[in-house]
Image 1 (cartoon, rainbow, N blue to C red):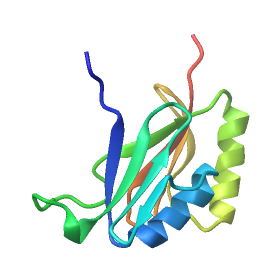
Image 2 (image 1 turned 90 degrees about the horizontal axis):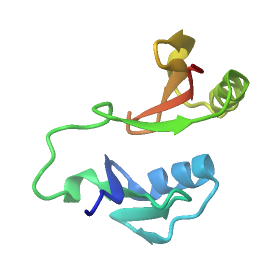
Image 3 (image 1 turned 60 degrees about the vertical axis):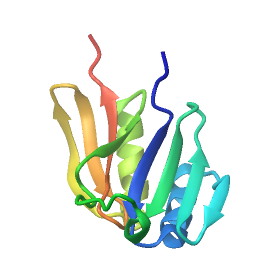
Length: 123
């Protein structure tokens, strides 16, 4: 069976968003053009950033309709990422807190896409 291999985010400026995600992920895009940037992630998943005005068929949703999630091993790591991202000026949509599934916070990228960081609850 084939499984999804790409996540596409619709962005206002793929060049600016590409620079943002290169810093956030610590990797350079494997493809970069004025209307598209592509990152290959260690998990095998690819993250594409597509110019919103070029998407066909036209997309009716902008940022915030989904989340990119980063699973970490501990609450302390979640706090470290929160401190680092807040220091880099990322908007924090949800301060660190405990929820049913674990310890988490949510930030946003320049287009309003939600970035959730969490450490799963331990059984």
